[in-house]
Amino acid sequence: MRPGLFISIIFVLAIIVSTAIYLYLLPEYIQKGGPLVVVLITISIMNITFIIERALTLRKARGKRSSVVFLKETMDAIRRSDLDRTIALCNAQRGTLANVLRSGIERFQQVSKENLTSDRQIAEVRRAIDEANALEMPLLERNLIALSTIASIATMVGLLGTTIGMIRSFAAMGKAGGAPDAIQLAIGISEALINTAGGLFAAIVGIVAYNYFVNRVDTFTYQIDEISQEMIAMLTGRAA
Image 1 (cartoon, rainbow, N blue to C red):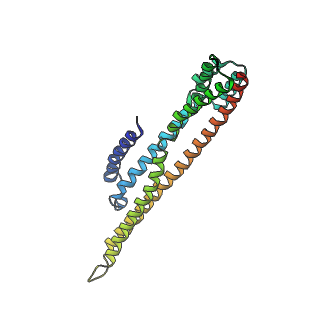
Image 2: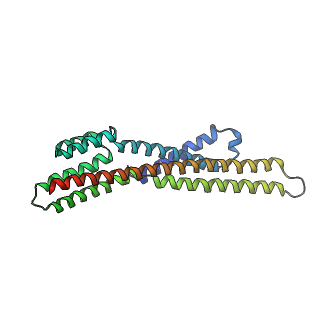
Image 3: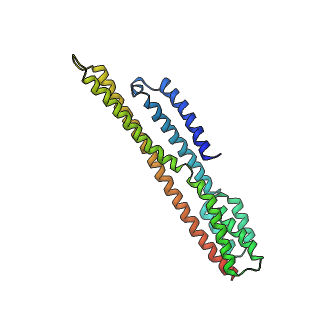
């Protein structure tokens, strides 16, 4: 499914669910936060959805077995020049790292049968690895921008609710011809605080999740680059 379509579907479903929650499940004092509470609930639902989606995607990207065991067996197979065994291990492991390594090994098997210099063979292997990386990285980074954007929007929505609540409060205090309207004053303050709390909660969750997943992706990328260079060094000795 295309990322834009996925986000659109999640957005529509989140609005429907958040509206139902606002109307039927929230206590009355939170409902006094006004219509912006629906927006904050929608943002929170999207936050949770993207966090679950990213967690599942990164778990799948690791592959089926421990990466330490997989890399040990794979590097041993390359040292023994057992490339068919290496490809079989990658097919069994799956995941991003396995896909990248398999692309490099398969390209090496192809070019080793051609009348090419060792430098040209390694250049082709590097190109295959880069192409595989270019296909895999968008999958690891997908929806991270959405998480960052949601965190920023949540802060702004919370601030907007705070401002509207304070306007209501000052309007109640400035009522002409008498004492301030205590009920409207309380409603305004309640609206301001509820939206502030909701905006901060959604923003904190989004920022923490974004930074966590960015760190995971960076670690994954570094691991892929390191292992790819080690594999290329081994294949260089074989091609020479």
